[in-house]
Image 1 (tube, one colour):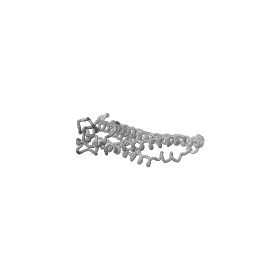
Image 2: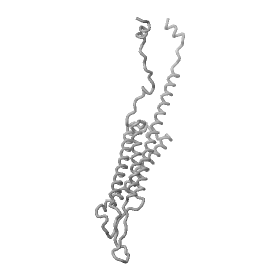
Image 3: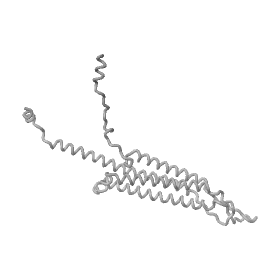
Image 4: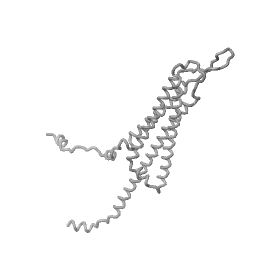
Length: 246
């Protein structure tokens, strides 16, 4: 048998290098720093952008009115709508659902992530920390501002839906009074929808900062503890070691 074949058979199998990334535990989907959390935040921002585009479509297609006259004197007595309102109604309805879905997804994920985060639970009890107080104020601001922006945007969309749904039939028939939406209502609702998803993303980033701060503090504590244990243990004398060997 050739010597090269013998050396190949006797050679131990090579082991793949094990890195720290292989030993690190895979983060759960509800973890603040997981890929699932980042995906959900990006998805909700896209939903807010979609809501904004739909509101622009509803604004451009909103129903307007024009006055007609019954006699030859030019006296305006009745009004008619310029459209049935189906397109702005459908666009506003889709924008309403998109904004509501983005809000539900973001806050449901944040609620699950915060409830399972040891960092935020410990940080909430650390009342003497300036960093914890600042993060608490920021989180409170983002939370309140998000819900206020969401509520106002949804109310504006509901007003637009109620007005546009009132003349789906017989919209070209003259009538003594016509109810229309002021210019800019749907646009304002779309802007508030964008603001809502960005404020919710700010709340997510604030919670993520707290998580990173806690992890860094735990690493420093572990290093200090290991260093204290190493320096606190008395060094072994070489003479005692040689005597024990004999």
